[in-house]
Length: 376
Image 1: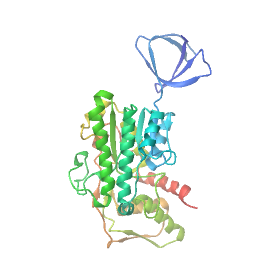
Image 2: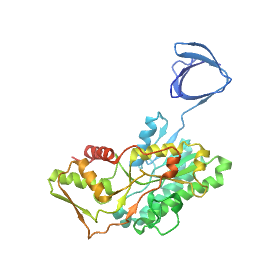
Image 3: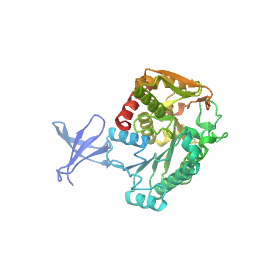
Image 4: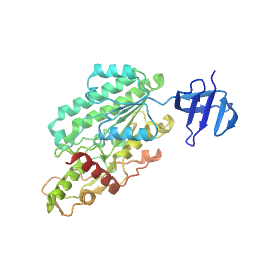
């Protein structure tokens, strides 16, 4: 059997080279049993003999890699040295098509799946296209989760939404609030689909966890923003909508920008790369660690920044990031919506993760992305 050359790397990874195949150099993760002998160490190299396990990088499928969250997950995985990533555009793979999804999974057989693909939008879009929101999201989730199970995928992370919680849920919202009250009517179809995704994961865990090693997890992000956001004037969320409006006011030298509502409702926002980091963190937690903070039929984990601010404070922060010098006016005749919406992220914090990007820095990066990709 060919000898192995092993060069230790501080992170615990090693570069492994088969002497008999000097042109085939790959990186592996190496687990060395205690009985392993190291001999002839010199110049940072050593020859090894004994019992070893070479573990290849997992093949990871990111569904929805062109969306804001999916793209951030790809960035995070690449930054961590993962290279065996699988992606497909919507033109290449329609995730609502059961036959196509089945063929894809049978061909690729990934080891892990990040399910970040979804039809998303703001209040206007949810009100206008409720059938599309519930149908497309249900189909995507059912197809991906079931076909992942069929080909033996044991690790899957499903990304939900904070809208799964009741409209009048106590604040901050804990995971225990799920299914305890009536949903917000404007995005109920989308929320029902996301709840179904959580329950799909839990049901497959309950039925196939012991027999097939299935470990499908769910994370619920708060309001996200950052590179890759949707800045459509009608179908965008609050931060990208404000970025566009303040930018246009800046360019046109408009003296005022009017914001709907009183500005008093409080909201929480998380930079998308923080969300991606949290997703990878949760995916890679040992099962016992994850299980200590969850229950079989309540396995979701909230992902939030940890604090909120008023819409008025947010508007001023966006104005500062954009460099708009005019006046902000609030139209109190327009509806405010829910007074407060804040996630309780204590479970995630207990699992060893905290948000890193503050709002001011995040808004600057988001505005830079907008200028680069959404202006002439």
